[in-house]
Image (tube, rainbow over all chains, first blue to last red; front, top):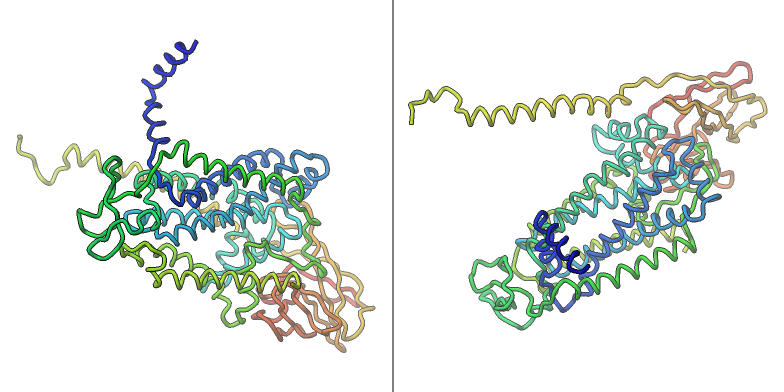
Length: 388
Length: 163
């Protein structure tokens, strides 16, 4: 039997080269030290896949129509316990995904992993971050309860403050001057097709680039091992595992390097990845069962008693909407756009070979201030809305 | 190698040109209807609909009073949605406000204690005349196009000024 299976595998391998593909995929050399920090990327991927799977199943029931979206989810809530868990997983894994992708980004920023030749790993990562935010915001429109409706109203109204073409952009998203049937259809299409159609190929590119350049590890993998001409700690490449391409970017042939200690991706890194991802999925499952996804009363444009409360990830921008005076409202567009552009430009600004976070004050200090700014806005926003 | 007229396309150049032209034809033929499809709602004229709000004889002077009025929900849906209308009388003058904040279009409400319209989202304030007097709103509270037959109020589904 085993022999038969082996023969079948050979047959398959001859036609697909599956064997070498698996070898390449599984036995990549990865750094030993700090490897728990490198589980954030795979955790992000797992949470995104959770979104994909639960999202596909939610479309088996959800009706993207202003007259039936809320009813279909209310049916789920009232009559379908398992469906409610699926929706709960979709919501809670989205929330946790936003956290984890943020941590992944902070970790990458901290360890200077965006440096040559991995600038495009970072750029695709920023693209993925923006797309995930886009998924979160468009997803928040869909239930068409009060929270969803007013989120849709406020979010689609923000582009109105774009100079010259503001009302055009707003109407393009809404499909009319006001939020209505076309807004929901369009946002549903954007959420389930348009953004994922960009998101998933970009994940492919992000992973392909990761594998092309390899895992360099962070500063701790090199510390004290070697001093280059610039006085930067860099070890020579270990003979048994030559890893290309050169690190760091300085033009010298002695600076080819890989982390001092490496191990195989499988099963060493996959073990850590598995533990972290499984723990997150367990947390998501518990939250999905214990709390679930809320569904407020159906959208009511005539309300004069409902206080719209934004999704937590929208709080910094919502607080900006409160703080920015009427003459400067376009600032709420300029600041996030500027932030994303700065993130995209980061690897082209911070180009030196230095990767020790404590030796890169020029990026670490502004970065820390930016994070602090967002955290303060979030705290102010939650204080205002929840009377903390 | 045979002598070749440089003004004539080589077989290779012809191939390149043909590939590019094919791509351009497909892109244009797909692009025009898709972009038109995306933009078409922008050029659709919203249908003017008048609806009776009700009798406003009982609305007290100087005290904004809320009414709800159903309007068809636009495009293909047959369902109607309720919109809020604040009627404000001051002497012979009657104003008909919407509850849509001019900042981010959140639902404002009349706050009798403040004696102002308050937007719960970002703290916008309007006085009883709809003037934006505090917070981020850049314009006064929108007013509905309306007419009053005797004491019966009718409104159209549009504002006197676009927001």
